Image (cartoon, one colour):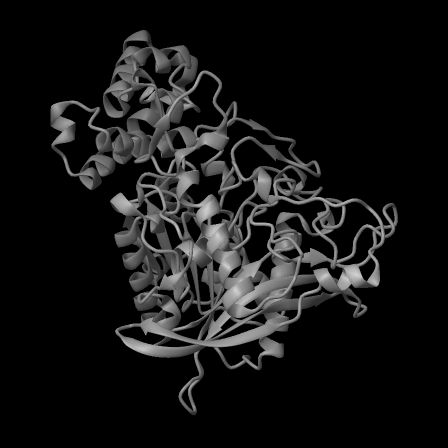
Length: 529
């Protein structure tokens, strides 16, 4: 968990060393081109036509036929000028006559990530095969998709969306200071897309995408669901409000390992929320690796984390608030207890004045010369003297595996015909993202937007999926954000939570992928009744 920040409050760009999605280690997936015009024959090679294919597979215990449609949706400005093209892959089933199937729009995070992760790893009716050893092993060639019989396509059509600057999505038009550089037919460029990279602009553009998609596909009678992972959780919390502004009601929104309010996740010089919220996950990881005392190791992990969470919210919080006024006896007692609950030496907490170490993933198994993954604390990898986040062990189960499988599926099975590079993660997006507008203060987040919608619409349902070993977006961070929303107490019953035996992408664990799909399907079914 990298949580130190260089936070420019109220300025255009907020640079976070903390990264709330699989942005790390994917530098080879971003593409850049030389500025300049493409010739007509070159343009055609980078163009993308909408294509569709009818497939069938095992789904919900029976063989089901569905249509896969992949293509670009134009985004127009107020004058009707095309500003961007957003690529999506839609899975639809022909409804029974007189019925209207729900549709769920699916996003990953970053910001800067395409939807490849939830697409290939989690929810689509065809996903990558299960990874051995509960998702901890190495993927086995060939990297190709197989049927996912548990996909939520059983109950709702699925649209996997790639925001501008990711996937095949690009901006359109020319920037005045870079004429000729911004063709949507060309490979990826930084300057072409920055106008779309900001928390509020992103929500507005994605809401407009949904509106246009509903119109183009004659789906205005469908119930609308949003599903977002990591920074996509910030989208899932914010989009219901943005959709309402253009006349679209959201039936339910699902957040998977989400970041919906950065103040609960990002460690700053004065904020203590992230320190408090990460301790239960640290305890769970220490428990998984057998590092705790005998009495704590005997506890089921959920009982352990419940106990730790209660302690962190009370005693640890009070000690942090007292700061330099905390007497030495209590200071030493707190360091001892933090050491007992996390297995780290007391000196780590004494030297930091009880602040939680931002490099916990590098410290916990350093005696064995191992690191644990900040995305899935169950996973380990050999440590090195000079370590980069590129070596996070979770990368081996997602990067090449998902990307290769998606390209084989889109370009082969579905029939997308283009040389335009598919940007799985645009590594220039995050550093150029405008997290706060000029007039905004504080930390980015959309919990306030979600609270507004939950006050306005008593029927709005929320689904929260969390991975127990996730250090990037610790489960307690989002629970704290939701618990403190300004909504009537009875609306808390509209929030359904599930904890999974995995990390940030709990679906890399095959059994948890099955549970996640079934839980989402059951939640959607119950919500539309």
